[in-house]
Structure formats: C-alpha cells, structure tokens
Length: 128
Image 1 (cartoon, rainbow, N blue to C red):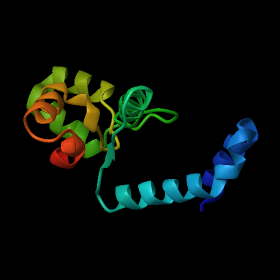
Image 2: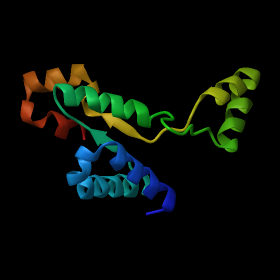
Image 3: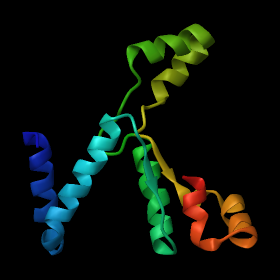
Image 4: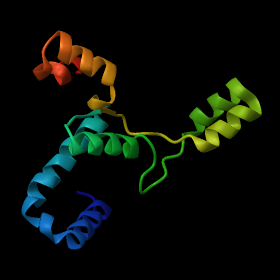
C-alpha cells in the first residue's frame, strides 16, 4: 500500500477506533475495489432500507470528486471545446472524472416491476 494511502487509513482508524476490529476486512474491501477500478470495472452497490440510502450516497460521492477533485484530462477538455466552443470550455471546467459506480437500488421502475412480475429475490441479479 502506498505511503499516502497508509496514512489515510491510519488517520481513519485513529478517528474511528470502534472500527479497528474490522480493519482487515475494510482493507481487503479497499484492495478489491482498487483492483476492480484498475481493471476498468465498476462498483455495483445494493442494499435495503438505510443501506439503500447509503448505496446511493456512496455512488454519488464516487461519481464526482469527494476528498479530491478529479478534473478532466486535457484530451477530454479539448474534445468539449472542439464540440462546443466556449460553452464546451465552460462545461469542461465544471465536469469531473468519476469512478464508475451504480446503485442498483436507483431503478425503482425496474425493481418494483421485477418484484411484482418475476421474483423479488433476483432484483439485483437481473440488473447485473
């Protein structure tokens, strides 16, 4: 693990000592997510009740800058300018690169139709 990442994790566990017993599992989850993103994958999130709300929040934070702003690359910015001139340049300044994440609970029409018409135990499997 890179030094900066290790510092962030150490600070996290210092701030939230009650999570220390889950440290190994949390670090393993981090490694799995990092591996997924490095391989060009996306994070699929699901849950019910409060966990459903958490999924949508997490997806929102990943799809834009959270602690660090993730500006577009110069090539991406140039493409916006080429396509839209000054307006494209304004858009390119505001957009950020996101980490691909999908909250599977965010599709209420599909979820409720599948629950009603097919099998509620398979709503997330159907989306994946």
